[in-house]
Length: 348
Length: 139
Image (cartoon, rainbow over all chains, first blue to last red; front, top):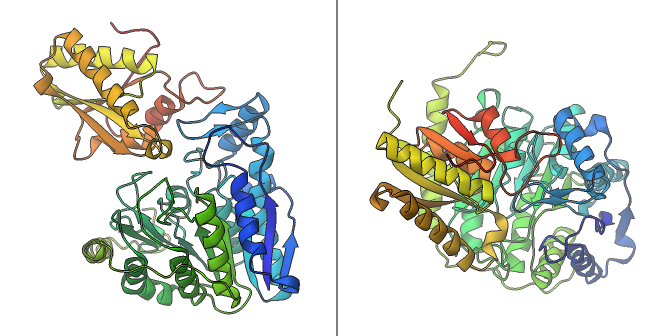
C-alpha cells in the first residue's frame, strides 16, 4: 500500500523561470500513476502544520518574520529563495503533509508513505529560509515522532547536503541523520568531520561524494560507514529526504545516478525500518522533470514490489577514494569526541 | 589585539556590496593587509550563465585598480553556499580572515530588520569582527 500525502503543488508559491516549480509535482504524480497501483494507492490530504508543530523545529521569531514577510507581499529571501504572498500557506501545508502520512501509516500499521509536496524543506534552518526551502518538512515530521517517544532515522539522498535538518537535530539523541551528497557543492556543509553535537555525538553521518560518483559508490558509502551506526541506533521510524537531483540528467549537480540506483537505495533504506508502516519519503530536490518522474516511479515501485522498468543501476564512477577518506575522517572525529564525553546533566 | 592581516569582503554585485568593496580596498591599503573578495555560489548559479560570475570578478578587479591596490595583495574566492554561511566560514582556512566586511543589504532581505539578512545573521553569529558598510558609503 502506497500512501501519498498530497499532491500539494504549491501553485501560488511560484516564480516564473525558477527551477523549483509546481510542474515538479505533476511529474511526480505521473510517475506514481505509471505504477498502476489501483487499490494499493491511498491519497490523504493533511492540514497545514500548526504553530505548536512548527515551533518544535523553528524559532517563533522566524515563523513570525516569515509570515509577516509573506503577508506584505514576499520577495527575495536570499539569492536562491523567494516567497510570495501565498508562500506561508503553501509551506505550512507542505510541512503538515508529512504528519498526515504518519497518521495514515499508524492507522494501518502497514504501507509506505510518500509526501508529494513543495516547497521542499531540508535546507531550512531553525531561524532562516534558504536553498528554495521555507519550512523544514522532514524535520517537522521527525520532531513530532520524537515527541511521541520514537527514535527517528533520517536518510537524505538529495544531491545537496541537508544543512537545515542537520542543524535542527545536531544535539538530539533521538534522531540519527545520514546524508549522501555531492561535495563540494551548495550549501558547503556536510563534511565527514561533522558528527553531531555534545548530546548526539556520532549521530550525524555525512557521506560526501565527488562529481561523477555512481550508484555503486553511494551504496558502498552507506554500507561501510552508515550501516554500523544505523544498526546501533535501532530506529523505530525511517524518514527519507528523497531528492532526485543526484540523477545524471539533473541540471543542478553532477552526480551520475540512474532511476535504477534510486530503486536500489530505496530497498536498502527500507531495510532500516523496524517493520511495515514505518517509512515515509519526502520530496526534496529533482529538477529534470523526466528524471524526476522515472526516479519516483522506480523508487516507489521498488518499495512496493510493483512492476516498473527502471534504468539500469550505475557503477564504475569515481568516489571510492572519497568514501575511504570520509570513513577515516569520521573515525578520527568520533575518537576525538570520545575524549570529550560529557556526563548526562553536565552544564557543559 | 592581533594585527589584521587578511580581510574578507563579500561581493554579490549589488550596489551595497560595491560600497563594501571600495571601503575594504581602502582599509587594506591603510593596513598593508591582504584582501579576499568572497562570492557565495548559490543553488541557481549551477544552472546560470558562468559569464555572470566572471563579470562579477571583473568588477572587483576594476575596483581594485581604481583604488590603487597592488592586485597581488588581493584574490577572488568562490565558495558554495548561501552568503551568510560562506562569510561565517571566512574565518577558517582557506581564507583565514581576521575581519569580514559586508554591505548593509545585498540580494535578499528580511522585512522588519534594519539590515539585510546576511549582515544581520553575521552580526549574530560571527566569531571574528565584522564591518557593515552603510548603504552608499564608500569612504
